[in-house]
Amino acid sequence: MSRTDAQSMNIRAAVLRTSGAPLQIEDVLLEAPRPTEVRVRVVATGVCHTDMVVRDQLFPTPLPIILGHEGAGVVDAVGSAVTTVKSGDHVVMTYMSCGLCLPCETGHPAHCTHMHPLNFGGGRLDGSTSACACGNDHAIHDHFFGQSSFSTYTIANERNVVKVAKQAPLELLGPLGCGIQTGAGSVLNALKVEAGSSFAAFGAGAVGLAAVMAAKVAGATTIIAVDVTPSRLELARELGATHVINSREEDPVQRIHAITQSGVNYSLECSGRSEVLRQAIDSLTTLGTCGIVGATKVGTEVAFNINDVMIPGKRIMGIVQGDVVANAFIPKLVDLYLQGRFPFDKLCKFYEFEEVNQAMADSERGVTIKPILRMPAPASV
Image (cartoon, rainbow, N blue to C red; front, side, top):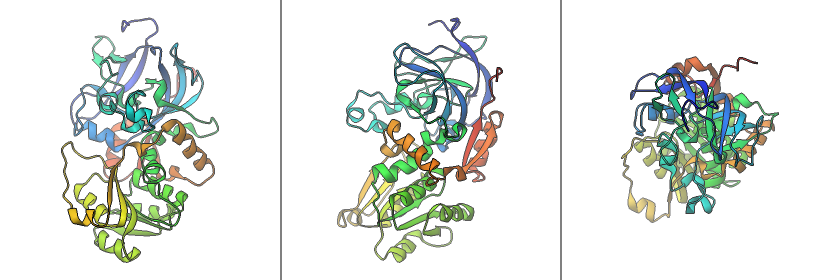
């Protein structure tokens, strides 16, 4: 399709052009949705740690690119083959998967064989993009996590849009598509934390605090949050943690073993630090499981005591997006929120779209746990 096709539209998008540089809000031309695609008017989008990881090219992607992968909005147009959503539906956008590989076919789309090219490749699987710079027709990479939601409108696929109830506050829901889903899904779906068990979250950012809330929902009776920021630990208590540990002040492994007498049944490493992963493993009891969700620089390795893992039968599990099927899981989180049992809004602070770089900076400094960018309302509203 020609970039000047009559069905294309002008949008505004935050574009990363140089590694580590501030994002630039630019005029961009967006093509119409293809048969299996959906065009979404973005109402709001979360800012996630992975956006900063890619901005700094610790996870390399082609540049220039439109980032953003926790978008929520209203369906504006659908392709000819789309059957599950229609114009006017409220949706949360999540990660993209192919739907055809063995992991997808067996209920694990977050571990899709094509996860990297579909989410970090800067375009569709065939290499095409939906966006180009206005005035010169130069392609801008997009389809970041299948959505590139740092934009006023975006093209997603029918596979990675999740219809949500219209009574839910749409501008708040975007983070359910990645960070909140990752923390909660890791506890409820991947680790399958059960009632009466013990759980420790290493890192009390958005993912770790979502995990704490989910552990409470699951009925865990010992819920431990580990972090270095007192305000986050205080919030963790408010959200359901029975114990908090400031790892700058005491050894979390020793403290966890003292609290539990033997170690926790489940731990979740959310910080992306190799030394913290070792602590999460060492904090486990016999037959305990450690989940890994923290994003690290490509090539990062960690050492652990092999016998201390093998003999007590500890398990180490890699987890992406909570290993959830988003179309089933995100509506459950919305229901839990509406019931008052999953108050993830306590993590969030709103910013205007033009404040995208400030939102990123505040997240990196720990000032804001989960920034959400509000998009400008359409001119006709």
